[in-house]
Image (cartoon, rainbow, N blue to C red; front, side, top):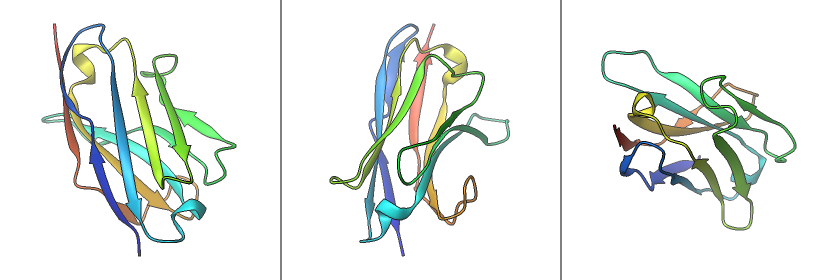
Length: 118
């Protein structure tokens, strides 16, 4: 069982930066792949970034490539999403998720709101 909690969201001006954290409980979290997703009002949830349990492979949606960076600290049981060059269209609730099959997730956090003002 893995329990996930996201934090670090907030209000930022366009062009600004935020770092989201996904803190996990569970001794085996280091063996889980992790993804960040977002959902804006009236839109479907979309994948933002994935990172393999080893940290060796990552994936980014085209809309965030070059601006967002996913990383993990295994010692701290935490996965980060560094977001730079934020745009108003990045406004959404951001969720992290964990699973043992690449891009397939079994555990989800409660989400954290990111709002980018123009």
